[in-house]
Image 1 (cartoon, rainbow, N blue to C red):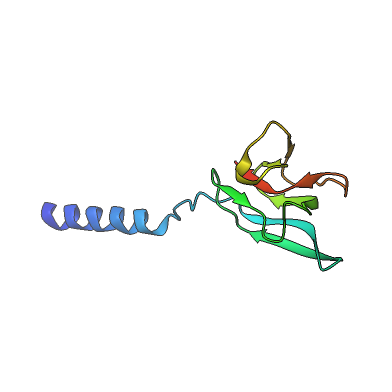
Image 2 (cartoon, rainbow, N blue to C red; image 1 turned 180 degrees about the vertical axis):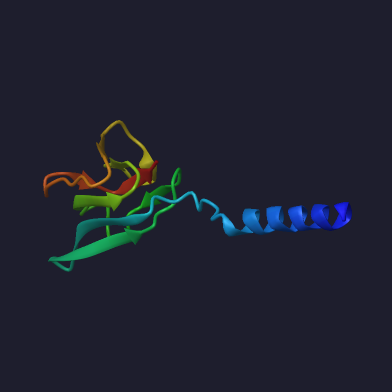
Length: 111
């Protein structure tokens, strides 16, 4: 009887551990921005971007940075003017925050 109870308890514990979702270490949601392509404004977005990893924004170039970021993720987004999340020019958007067309950005880091 004790062995059966121990096996049942162990099996239940394993099932419980497997049922709990594991964190994907991502800023769940969407980060949107605008960039210029051939003289026209285009919309870019990052869906569920990874946290703690610098992301160079697709579409942003040296000549034309991205602009007007909108952070609809669950984490803060630190936008950098330079590629590679470098330089001392940056701006932080809290979850749900947005900035206007005057904020230029080439890379972003989520927390």
